[in-house]
Length: 57
Image 1 (cartoon, helix red, strand yellow):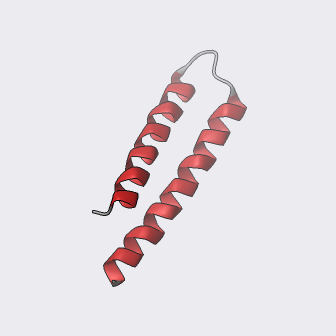
Image 2: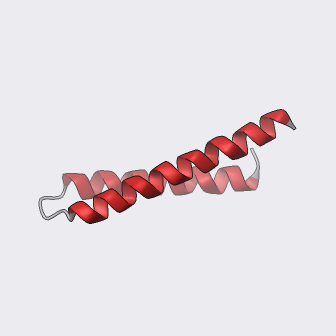
């Protein structure tokens, strides 16, 4: 696992945890949850790109 792949994986896990906390909170801000979901999708796409490159190399 490359360093970049590791960092992206950690970032994805942190965003996922924050998103779960935001959705479970009674005073949750729907816009914040949407932003976190978007950030999670972006990181997931980057994870796919990086892992695909490392698999082809």
